[in-house]
Image (cartoon, rainbow, N blue to C red):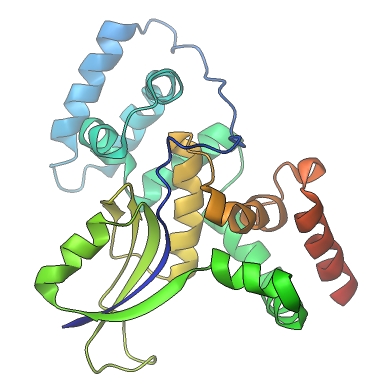
Length: 253
């Protein structure tokens, strides 16, 4: 028996809101073409199975970035197919690297630093909210808590469209080490064994950029806060709701 906690949504990513991400992709590296970059992609399928091969993988992932980005932007592949084609991307280090290639800022480093600055004020402001705003916040962060048998766990995860999940062994308290922390997109477990929930949230945001997936409607406000307040991206495009929250945070500092 395991204990499963998730932040979830059930909207498929093809039912998109306006995407906050750029459809720009860079030109291929000098001397590279579709054939050579596809050859390099196929090599990566073997490279990822070799131990202590991180440097080779990092170099090839950087070199094939434009090729991969064209695929994401032009073809909008499903998560399962894309993970099969580019398994090396679905690692903590490579998600950080891909985000830096796209946005030119560090992902987890920036996320954690800003979370340290804003987390206590965010909790204070949200708790102080009443009425519909507080209820909407609770609805957006649709957190559910349930006991699951091991043989049911995979089925439950496959039904989630987007989630950060936490698994505890039955009977263990909040102070006990977690059995697992991971990310699910389109029912596919794309990452597991992550160091913290905060890291999982940062990496989920990074994956949405890397995969050019728009924020699901039920979580749009949450991701906008992560993007524009925590990561300080596109702050000039804040919605009225996020602008109001940002103002409250500034006044409470």
